[in-house]
Length: 625
Image (cartoon, rainbow, N blue to C red; front, side):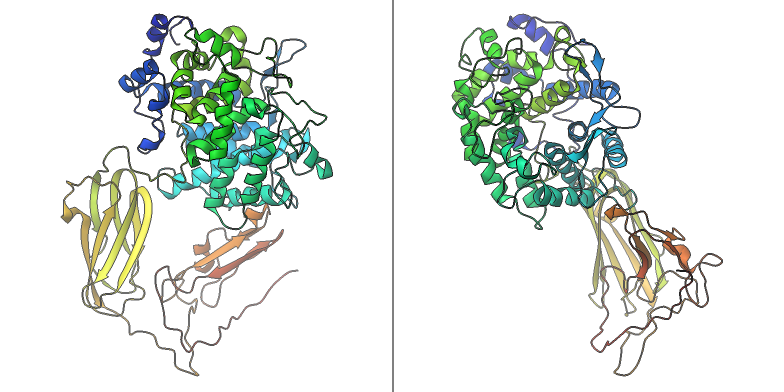
């Protein structure tokens, strides 16, 4: 538990602030880039504390995450919808979930480098909330209480998956593939769906996929995650969000309290009032955070302007008695007046603090981002906020308070733009080695090494006589590749070299090198006009052809289908008593949408001269319907 402190006096505050620090910089598995050091924007006392205790922000986020996992994640993996019933003041929603919560949970798991929980939430959302119809999205509510999408949820889940894909591609997270669903495949489905089903053709971001013609008159500015949309545009090129981003800023700038840095819960496409709440309540309060991220990640002038306007709401930011500032960091009616009993909320203060930082105006931020603001967000318990205000009984408050806190603390990076450098120099724990030193090719040779942490690596094979080269790349701590010699037609020595990103420069060069002697090599294949070449005769029970191309199978799993192929392991297609060795392969299909088997002609990186190649012939037969 944290020590107790009074928010109104700095001496007590610092007794509390210095109580927690344990881990370095942040919780992510790579060095924190300098671009996320926001200390120059902090009040002097806060900046001094952070300089002396660089672990403070990361530890507070990790502590709150532990509480979050223990209290807001159900046994089935979904983030629950815990809240207090306003009529009975009793806790409800512990057995219900909304898609918004899955997005928050996945983002928080990501920022805390918790792939296990990330995958658990992701898989539960896929199982219980993924729509398998003609449009791809997560149903906004479970169980059985809503079939349409909530755009903000899919935006957050999509961003989390893009960043997770980056982490796994760099070897910092484990590779993920569950029945053909990968971080990348699901991210792309979501990104396409948002642009095609949750935006109008001319770029208005709708609140969901099923609002019909009424969606344009019910826009939600707290869904305007313009930084997320820019990340999506950098991640892929199938769809573009340029027009959507421009429309978001156009609508926001026309809302009634834009000059105060406020945003309504709902508005129409002109920024005007609609039939829903036009005040800045539980929806609209998220807008400063959404827009601030575009200022912090992309330095967008429109974002900085909106954030700077918040000084016209938080007019007491430079008052030495910070209680007046905190009282202004709450929820607002449409006429600009503070909602009764809605000040000093940890979540609202965190959101407004994002707006202050997003302004990037030193005179404003160095007064507004102070120790009292931080204390009001993190509170005195193992969760965000104040136990006396029941902040821990609202999953929503905890979620956005943590996300806002992460943003102002430099703990919420744009991972797609980051260059991943290991936090500490990479150590080679097992030298590079080849399982065989002399071979007649093609023959499988295992090339291995080991590191003390995941890192990007490249193995380069170079023929001393032919000059032929082949590279194998990956990102992991345990390095293991198979080289078959396929495509090598010269008797020679092949040099093997390993390079590793972030490797300790004192590593011995001899530990990064090996050699393989080719004692016998086949003649280079030539296909003459009118002749033929056997790619695979299926008589030796080998899954590889002469160029190390391998059999594989595929299904519709990534499309939400349920097709299967038997045998499930492609290598078993040609093994004795499994497939049908000696004269062919045998596969059984249970087809929903599509399924099949195939063979790569060569392994990756191997080329064969097919100048005279005209056609390929298959012999096959089918059984059943």
